[in-house]
Length: 227
Ligand SMILES: NC(=O)CC[C@H](N)C(=O)O
Image (cartoon, rainbow, N blue to C red; front, top):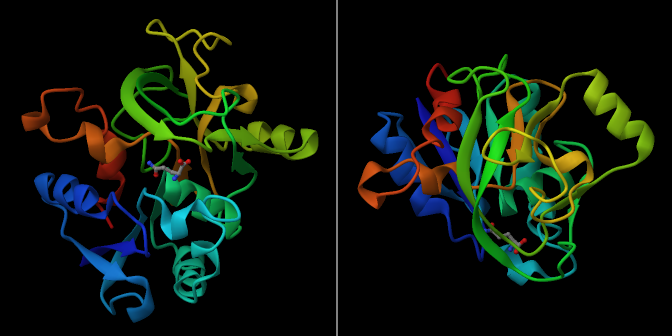
């Protein structure tokens, strides 16, 4: 069993994802997108970075790599798929998840720790937490503002597919705690199945105790544990 961390030209969080998963005892390896998915794939990470230099829109070009057909088919078969930051953008650009991640309200690249409230704890990615728990993860993005239409937003909420919202340290979802202007402070969402999730903050950068910061990201990555 192997979690494939798909590497595109310009991905830069693929090694971090492999290191964080390995630390948790989850077998993971990088898979260059042109080589397709390994045969024994049991999970897929779309890692962060600047695939194809964020040209057109962040994630737009990687979403059109042929491997994404394989990722979609695997997701439909129930293989867990996690998109992180640029991987979240690739996930939304390829239709794995709803909505879009677009230019931050500040129009600047933002790199800072944020607090997230767990909105749905009944998923593989949040099973380690309780609903309402507050976790701390870093963000590092220029195009992280979640947007979608009124209808689709209502459907996401009605289907309980909002996974995380930006909040303050006490779990209050406020405008001040929203780093990028995301609609409804949304930081992460589920796809059609709860085995597919994307989020802008980086769990793999908050998983290794040796780094000295939050290790709250471990719970998210443990979504691959039973894969
Ligand atoms: N850390 C990342 O994955 C960055 C994503 C993307 N390049 C952006 O700036 O929005």
